[in-house]
Structures are given as C-alpha cells and as structure tokens.
Image (cartoon, rainbow, N blue to C red; front, top):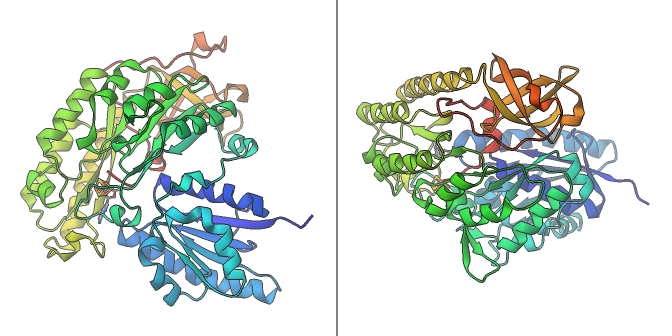
Length: 482
Ligand code: 5AD
Ligand code: SF4
C-alpha cells in the first residue's frame, strides 16, 4: 500500500464553500488523499475561493504568493506540492490565474469538482489544467457521498446543498455569473443524503442554496416541489431534530414555506432574509425586485405563522447613488424590523456586474461612517436579543466538548452558542437549558431540572417577547446569495 497523500483545503467565503470543500475531500479520498491542517507539508493544497467582494478575491493572490515559497521549499526537499484554485474566483478569473500565477497547477470552477482527479492527472502529465465549464448534468450525480466515518467525524450538524445558482441578477452581485443559473436537485437525492446523514448521527440539517427558497426540484410525484414541501418531507426522517435553510430571497417566500414554519417544530424559527437596503430607490437600482413594503409584508407573514421567529439580514452601504436620506431609510427599516443580527458590507464594485458601470457617488469616508452607524444599531439589537435570553429556559442542541474542561457547547434555536457543565453523552441531544449569564456572544447556563433525567425533548417554542440575537459565529451558517 502506498502512503496516504496529504490534502490541505483552505476555504473562504460562505457556507456553500465549506460544504463544497467536504465534497472535494470525499472525491479525493478514493485517490488516497487524507486531510491535513497544515499547508506546508501537504502534497496538494486547494484554495477554495470567494469572489463576492474585492477584499475576498484579493486574498487569493496573497495566499498564492505564500504557496509559491512553500512549493519551492517542498521541491528542494524532493517533494511535489500541487496547488489548485477552486471556487468562485477560479470560475470568474480562471485564465487570468493561469497567466498570473505559475505556481497554480489546476483551476477548477464550482461545477466541476467531480473532475478533480482527472485534472490532477492532467497536471501531473506535465500540463496545467483549467475547468470552468457549466455542464448540463447535475454535478452531484458524480460526487461520491461521504463515508460513514467522515460523516461522524464532521459532527451532528450538517449542510446539504439543495439548490445552486441564482437568476435574480441583483446589479451588484457576481453570483449569477460564478455559480450560474438556478438549478435544483431532485427531491429523492436530497432525501437520500439526509437519510444517510441521519443514519450516521447527524441531528441538524441546514439546506443551502444561493436562492434556497427558489428551490423547485423534481418531486417523486413527477412535479416540482417547493422548499416548504421538501421541509415537510425531511421532517419525517427519524433522528432529524432540527431543520434550517439559507439563504432566502424575499420575493420567493411561498405559502408552503410559511405553513412549514407554523406546522413543523423541527423547523427552526430563525430566518436569514437579506434586504440589502431600506430605500426603495436603491432597491430598484439594485434590481432587487421588491420594495421595503413587500419586505415588511413577508416578515409579517412569517411572524403571523410563528411568533417566536427571528430574522437576520444582509445590508450594503454606499451603493452608487445612495444619499444620506436613503441611508436613513435603511436605519429606519432596521429599527422597525428588529433583527437578531445582520451582516453589513461596504459596496464593492465587481467586474462584469451592471453596477460596476455606475458612477460611484459615496466617498470611502462616508461609506465607513455609514457602516459604523449601521453596525452599531445592529449590535445593539443583537445585544438586546441575547440579553433577553438570561433567566429563560431554552432548548439547546449539544454539539461538542467546549474548550473549558467539563463544558459542553450547543446551540439554541437562534444559533447562539450555549455552554453547560455536563458529561459528553448529551452531545446530539436537544435539552432545555436555563440561561444564567452572557459572556460576549456565548450563553452560559445549566441543564434544566427536567432534562436531568436525560430525556430528549422536542423543540419548544421560545415565548414571543424573546427576540434573541445571534452570535457572531452565525456567519458560518449563511450562504452567499439572495
Ligand atoms: N459589494 C458589497 N457587498 C456585496 N454583497 C454581494 N455583492 C456585494 C458587493 N458587490 C453582499 C450582499 C449579499 C452578501 C452575501 O454579500 O449583502 O447578501
Ligand atoms: Fe442572487 Fe442574492 Fe446575488 Fe441577488 S444578491 S443576484 S438574489 S445571489
């Protein structure tokens, strides 16, 4: 038997990249690759890149500079190190990467990961390889499912891609170009994936897609199923305690999704629903296809169905043409909705998008100032949301031992990390926890009395007054899009 080859993957950007990285590991495992945390002694380094904002893209070239040194050192030591650029920068700038960065052996776009073994062979045969096609077939049909041991090693919470790409064409956004147009996976394949995960100890599934609620995969009845219908079906799978989905577009919120929130205790009352701006003028310039009033109505529909529901959002400040008045409308919308948390970004012109041709009107200094004002408002909402949890008993799904000995960490319905002193046999269970204090973004508490008998409980809803705010780490649960 030959020694295993070491594979290091560095993922940037959203959760779909984290999920794709796991698919690449699963694809390369039969080729004898095992993951290593260290790039320097790896035989294969994959940079899984993000193109959403300029800063995210720039990281690739600085990382490639470092890899040039590591690759040369490996060669001096008589080893070969191959370097792959994957992800959305690979898709958008494939030829340029080949031209600019001789250190790179393979460039592969998100739709072609199943071709990685062949591309590596091509590179080994002396060439450099580039694959940024958008094949018509479902790439998932070619990607091997994870092995039981890999599923167990990845923990009790898992992501499953149900939809990829976006047809919305917001004027600022690269996603329709890097991830292509919307494709939904068939229902049967998703059920298979979730069943396999559940059989191997996974208790929480987050369905992911760039426009996840645009899902319309072929159902077993021969008709397209909406996201809500899919969620009803997945909630029937034994072992699945929690379901989530990300990222949603306000225009595609169908009644079945609202009904699913009303009917399914497993569907967490926590929705990431980006709005981007609170100004109708700017929303139109962004081609968002909804007004602030449309957005408020969608929020009301969710809240009518489930009073304890909480929302997060994304915002862009300094879009071309944004006046102080437009920005004030964004602050007003945030105040009115009351978020559990949100991400806010300075506008970053992306090559090839319609907005990149617009004259930028907001100075960097004004953008910085608006960003701080918006983030302060969101932070205060988030702090109030978290503080409202103190003294309450909330359901926590326990995930893993915490850093402090004897502590186990899990998450509330709102993805707030919650720590208790307990033995690690509670991992994988949903148990009520009485929250005693808040340390930065983490809740500290103790197992509620009735859980000490260790009976797993259903996800009981949190009283409506509680508007908790998510932890910073929620970013790891969102997917670029919508
Ligand atoms: N500039 C700044 N922010 C952007 N986003 C997407 N494209 C851009 C851009 N060109 C933000 C949006 C989106 C999130 C994933 O990233 O808020 O919802
Ligand atoms: Fe699609 Fe979201 Fe990008 Fe708009 S911002 S184009 S909805 S991925």
